[in-house]
Image (tube, rainbow, N blue to C red; front, top):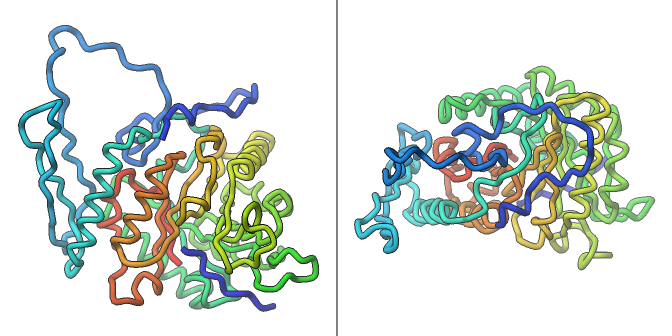
Amino acid sequence: MSLLAFAACGGDSQAHADTSGDSVKVKTVSTGRSKRDSLAGYVVDTPPLPPPPPSQQGEGPKKDTDRGAKDSTTSTDSIPKKADSVASDTAAPPLSVTMAPGRPRKDSLALITTLRFANKHPGWPVKGPAPAEGAILPNKRIIAFYGNPLSKRMGILGEIPPDQMLAKLDLVVKEWEAADPETPVQPALHYISVVAQAGPGRDGKYRLRMDSSAIEEVYGWAKRRNALLFLDIQAGQSTVMDELPRLMRFLERPDVHLGIDPEFYMHYSREGVMPGKKIGTLTAKEINYVIAQLSKLVAEKNLPPKVLVIHRFTRPMVQGYKDIKLDPRVQIVLHMDGWGAPWLKFDSYKDYVIDEPVQFTGFKLFYKNDTKKGDKLLTAGELVQLKPRPIYIQYQ
């Protein structure tokens, strides 16, 4: 079997009220009310707190001094922040970030710009329903290795032998545990189970489905590390409505979750275009279909909530973000999937993830594409400074 080695490249808070629309009672947890939850960009939509007693009124808000975990091998760059002329005549403290040695100033400036943009964006933190019992996010950060064992070009999951790959995953998990000790790490394997193709195939759908034995093999690797397994769909000229049903029996397992890649969804303005020739697009219609199917599965099988990862590195890749319906049984990650220099990746995170809030955020790192022009791969210590903090990290 051969694969076309595609490399997946890569706010109105009221729009995200609970619109799941079913009458089934969901047992929820306190997730969404802690500082960690707020940093991850999602809080439970609860009634406003009563005003403080008269003795406390007039006291200014306490300053948030948490700038994220810092890498001991880094250097610091800062820019004075302009004072808010309405709130105060005094200058606000400078916004500082910590970067790995040797980073060009352009990278630190892009991170600062991204942080300022997030701080001012009215859509963060997103407000929505409390997640059902057993939710992974944001109680843990998922660290995933991505790819397909049939191709060394599609990601680290297939680039090196399984034992080496799992050992490397162990090291990356430790890096994240050191960078953000307050957030436990959940390892994962993100497996492209439906792969977009350059040829139409027998059914003319420009995609290749991995068979059950291949999925079971990667699932076995994941079990060796108590890792999650994500099944990713590159639909080509098929649809998520056609591809999801055959994966549902795997998704019945509590440790199996889902990813959808709009880059290879060749419909709407991309109808009839071969995958890889142009970047595809996905709408809230398809996303809501998936959310509804996963929510139904969770309810029927009494499962913990499913995580749904949606790739994105251009604005048209996800259309109608305000129409995406949050559900306590499904946790949505909008995942920044672009490659390049650190400044470009921060800009993409700002423009395509922060600027259109959905629920949780993710960030992708490419071992080869991010470094082929001489840049060092971004570190965990650098990425935990982002706001909202990405709670799903993928390595390709």
